[in-house]
Image (cartoon, rainbow, N blue to C red):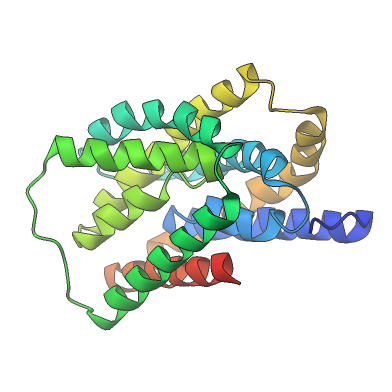
Length: 245
């Protein structure tokens, strides 16, 4: 049940914004997962998801600008082309699919994947670059973005399974999240789902989003390939647990 006490509401709103922005600035991922983990305790999904999508866009602007010369964007195109199609489908499903069933299913998926990949340290999927497969993953990610603000989840899982270099992984899933979130904002706006309350909450959260993102980018250069991979996997694992609690 959402929390309505003003002081607790604001504390959770700001804490979620800062932590999500900092972690995303550091590894390029987990904004939607962390924001949902905090904000779904203080607002209904129909109000939280538009705010998560707008915040996700803001969180990724600074990291992508700062790291634009070091990231490899060569795998990005098919993910984005299909991802933008999935957003309106996910938004349509937001009010038609039982959120609990969806949440539990994704929670078990993340938990199982995170445990398996952490135990099998050297495991990877040996696949050639196949735009069709990347497109399917991008489409599914777009759907999850419109439904739960988790656009980057499946693309992050997919490139992570292939053990690609961190500049390729981040150069794929982070700009994908930004672009899909941008499309998501337009879709939610024209559907009338961006309310005055979303705007008020965004104004409160804005400083925490920007400062956390900037601070996280400062940490990124100090994260090596092994630490980067384990950090993403631990975040996925924790996210699965949060969804099941």
